[in-house]
Image (cartoon, rainbow, N blue to C red):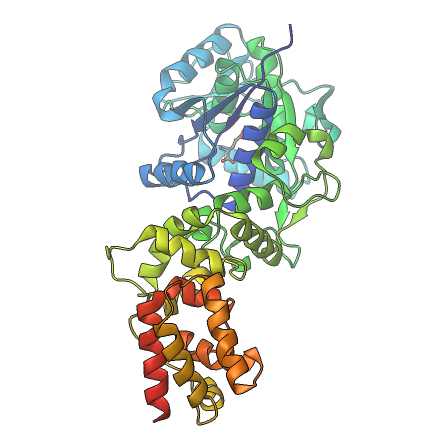
Amino acid sequence: MKEQVRVRFAPSPTGHLHIGGARTALFNWLYARHHGGTFILRIEDTDRTRSTDAYIEAITQGMHWLNLDWDEGPFRQTDRFAVYRSYVERLLQEGKAYHCYCAVEELEQRRQLALAQGRPQKYDGRCRDLKEAVPGRVPVVRFRTPQQGETVVDDLIRGRVVFDNSQLDDLIILRSDNSPTYNFTVVVDDVDMRITHVIRGDDHLNNTPKQIHIYKALGYEIPKFAHLPMILGADKTRLSKRHGATSVMAYEEMGYLPEALTNYLVRLGWSHGDQEVFSREELIRFFSFENVGNAAAVFNPEKLLWLNQQYIIAAAPGRLAELVVPFLAKQQIITEGQALDMAWLARAVKTLQERAKTLGELASSLRYYIAEEITFQEKAQEKFLNEKSLPLLKDLKEALAACADFSHAGLEPVFKGVVEKHGVKLGAVAQPVRVAMTGGTESPGIYEVLEVLGKEKTLQRLEKAILSIG
Ligand code: GLU
């Protein structure tokens, strides 16, 4: 029987969900969905000084926004201390772990000495074979790490990576305050949760040999590993705040669609020929580690913006209308809680979505549709609302007042009538009307604009333009 894929995303809640974490979550999620497996969310909150509930909330919020649903969890490591301690006990009994009574200051002194003498700065194994407890000292528990031979990580992305066991430390698995340490809890959880594939950032590659020894000591099968390439900024240093927004929710605030960010994240390391835009179904269908390179990926905000535009162009106007409302409020185009005719807003959006790269841009381009009053841009007013256009605007206003069909098909003959009467080009009428309706010289097709504004607003705005000429 084919083994059931079980993967996990294991964030430490010491910050928001950032680009790198979201990519790790996404790759795990895609791998699970591709194989019909199980995706588990595990919160690694053993570092109690830096982990907060607010960050757990922020991480799950980011995952919800990206539509990365999990099948089991969220588990919290701080709920599982009893489990970890029972495993420590087992290793102690089997002689695979031991109590170490060395004091922190002693360890530090020895470390300094090793440094000065050019020896490896690792634990010297002094308590490995102690027979008795040292009175008056509270011990830690160390894992007896094999010191001979090699450990091979057969990574699905990196290939074969060999580590020399003599470089590995007898790592502490239980601190003197009885709290378990990171590398140990990861293994216990991966064992307990029957994880088949560990997919994570390659900053964890160096932890892998240590963890492999713990799997072996516990007598468990070693999962497959896939260490994802690093993400760099344009200057080829590790992606950080210096390169702009790195928190996933910042992208929501900036007006990105979650599927655009998802599509962008997947391309940070993975490719499928030359294809850039993928539906969710395609991502699930195509995803495999064979197409994940091991070269670092460079985060490119312009490409993300371009993708976002592609998704805005393709989105259903009704959905964009819903999504744009908070941006309208933020830009004070509507007041908080103002009632809007959503079907009308969707029609307005439809005329503009081709041009907007973000929801923020979409919102600001909607301003003239929604505003009660518009102001004319000075240059546009000078150029198009003047004595020359006045008779055209007057005639058009009269003709539109008599027009019962304010659709593209109904409006076109009205404009044509004025154009023919005055022997001018369509632009000579359309451009002044555009300024009258929008305040500026750029907008969707003039019939579309009028169709959205409707008869009453159109006539009001024409009147205002005519009066402005005087
Ligand atoms: N908690 C670790 C982190 O946030 C992940 C550990 C793992 O995936 O094994 O980087």
